[in-house]
Image 1 (tube, one colour):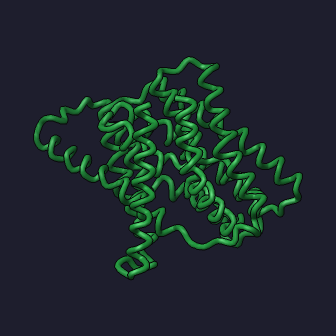
Image 2 (tube, helix red, strand yellow):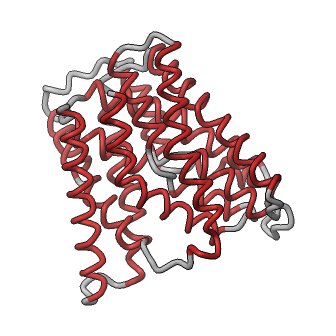
Image 3 (cartoon, rainbow, N blue to C red):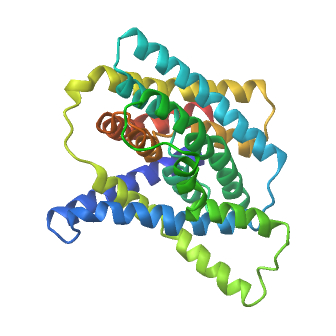
Amino acid sequence: MATFDSLLNYLILLVALGATAILLRRIQVIPASAEGVFGRLVTDFAMPALIFASLSTHPVTGIQLMGALLLFGAIAPIMIIAWLIGRTVGLERPALGSLIMVSGFGGTGTLGFAIVQHVFGDDQQMMADAVVMGQFGNLLPALTVGVAVSIVFGRGSEAPVTVRSTLGPMVSSPIFAATVLGIAASFLELKTTLWPLSLIYEYLHIASATLSVFVAFAIGLMLKPIPYRAIALLTAVAVVLKLIVEPVIGWSMTLLVALPDMERQLLILDTALPTGTIAAVVASRYGCDGAIASALVVATLIVSLVLLPATIFFTF
């Protein structure tokens, strides 16, 4: 159970780092406005460095893409179930759109990569697999299917919806650039032990190592008092679907489809992760209820501190 022990230790450290961020904010070492800064450091600095370093040295394989397809195959039915439940209880369209988004898309790009980096150590092949599965199985669908869902249920938003406004932020992001350049560089079979490439990759590895700290601080600064009694039902639905039902679907898929042990573990881990902030951002951007989406993201994060280790314990 080395993986379980490592994951448990990491989550304890994550909580400690998040608590440190809250303390530093309380004593005004970190200003309240810094929440967005740490989020940007994750998405615009640490993650691109990790993604490029991983993909450029390990070409994309069919097994990785199969894992990504299975990951989205676990996400899609959860979104359908969330829609059915929301319709049954009579949710208004903006709230229903937020519930669908939050119940399906996990935080593979932020918390997921940080967990793999810590739990599995300096295993570049594992990280490359995690990047491909997360990017193509979760992030890309969130920015395409998720945008479409948010538009449908968030109608009435004053923000104009165009192909450019939908895909522009994704295409122009450092994460997208790192993914494309990393895949392209993998075909060049770079000699990373030769100078100056060795120096460049050393820089990338140091930058990647900051991911856990930035993720923990971003999460810690995101936590604020929220009146969950007002959305107790939605919270329960999102938590059960995202942290219980989706991992069960992911685990069931590993029994039906023969995957190497590495991809099997990553698929289960990805489906068991709490909701990613990208789900709340996209939902809010296209007119869904951003306040509800953000509250549910925090709720799944808190509950995952218990359910994620339990899932790994019983399925790995």
